[in-house]
Image 1 (tube, rainbow over the protein chains, first blue to last red):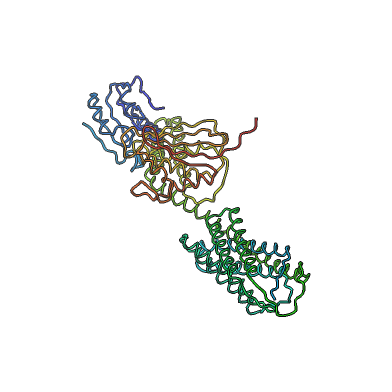
Image 2 (image 1 turned 60 degrees about the vertical axis):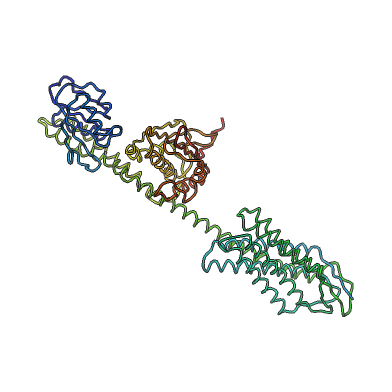
Length: 107
Length: 485
């Protein structure tokens, strides 16, 4: 399972989780749902860019160590595509406790 | 009046046999000198010298018993003893010279000269010990010829014996050395001129019964001593082989630890990911339970995922621990594809960090291979890490392809193909040499160890250039024989 679309709840804010590791992706998705947030998850930034997303407020939780284009390149792509979502960088390498040590980059 | 003796042909044959057997044992013992150190080295040298000197001496003794003179002869004890001592010391010198660290043609010739002189010195001293009613003199031509035979044949025998561990060649060396000893003896006897100054009887063609018995006794005792020495040598060889195998295993383990050390960050990541999952799932579970009413089904799913991730982390640790442990070699039947996937799991995040994509083409109908799983994991690990490193400097695409397929009728072929910097033709010949490395901080042991592991499994490891760029490292390992259909 790589993608869960919150159908019919378009007004609710959605967190887009992008992480190539299934353990992290699925558990973060579960955690966010347990606090009542809408979640969509993707295994790569490409998958995210190509997906059809509901036009709702939200943010992106991004694994900084993803393969492929770097986080900054991804951010540039988003701006070019006129997608304005804040990105929370998740550095799972140094912090095993998810949620601690994350950086928020908005624009 | 010049008298001539006659020979008992059976005892002559026995004397040649004694010389050859003694040569075999002495050369075998001498072979240990070069690799031993300290007191052991001296012991082997002394044992080789005593065997050689004693062998020459008993050959001479048996040959003299085979020789019948028409006038009674006896031997001077002191000179006879001296002839044995001289033979031991001079041939000992020969063994000393050839078993120094750096064997060279000069050393070989010097050693051959010493061996030849030892043989000749024993003979002529032994002849001088003869007492009887006959004067002994020599014809210079045959004396010179006897020296040439002794030195020449000894040199050839040493050359043969010290360039190989092949049993057949060592046997040939022993026969040549035996010919050096007996050839020298009988040529020298041809040079000997006995002038009788007492009563002369008709020489008997056959040796007397007493002489024959004495000759058999000497030969028998010599054979027993030589057999004991050969057994001791065999045990030592076995012990040395065991020690070598142990050293190779220790070295393999050290290189394995070094390879794993390079992967530390990557392995930590592989453990950290599922642990992060465990923490998130645990938190999620608590929150599902805190709902009013509690969301039990969702909480259960969270716990299930938590257990799965816990197991995943533990599997990574088990795999690493198996590689770190210095477990004794154990050959079992297993599927090589599983091992390939396990090793890829350990290197995956290292590959990701270097922007390398890993693809596998694993044939699904592979028969099980026979081998030590940890050692073959090490080989695959080493090849993968090398491939990733070779690609870290080049432009994309950085593609690593790991394939497995049946090879010939009874082996499996594993190929690791990268698109990295590749190998020039010069380094293709040397990549498997110990201490050869193209990495700035490499030790040059990894591939040397890999090749020795694969060869110990009865397989082959080789490298070829990849097209359009990079390198392909392939190895084969034997599988279970196909059932006859």
